[in-house]
Image (cartoon, rainbow, N blue to C red; front, side, top):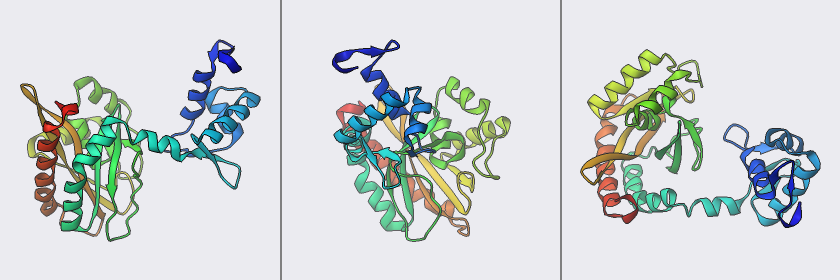
Length: 258
């Protein structure tokens, strides 16, 4: 396949991308056989591609023989405008929220039907937070996701509510109830969840609004995750709103978001 040759009509590039696409948040580590099966690549071809991708740094091979995404792809991903500029602009505001609350703080944007987490600062209490920077979680089951879904186009909302998956026994999956929740997010300006993505956690989130042209768009969502024994979520909302307004004003001044 060297020199741009193809195998069964697929180029070297498309096969390499298929190998990388085999990984996702639910399967971050895979064996050679699993990668070949998930990418639709012959085993021998997958073996060679994995060796090349590992040598370059796109993948890393663990001691148990499984593969995972390598640091070089992570470094490149951080250069994407939505990650680089948003993270740089938002960093001091996230730190302010963390300093004021000492809780886990999240910043996310919508990527299709998922909330893409672009920044996170861990809190003082140990909670089962499943999100990591770069992870994608369902919009309907997370605080930041519900904020982003409430601001999404109608076709995105319809697709997200067509067959919402259940992450825990508390995940709201009834489309009618979810639509009522989204209407409530619109009305009050913030969203909350209770053990919907992971047991033992509560979350609250607000939109990061940016003036663009003649209107206002929701560019991101800012949220906090706390242990389920906490009962002070409402008092966290003003802290988030102040930070979100600061991020929104800073983004409005940034060329990429104008």
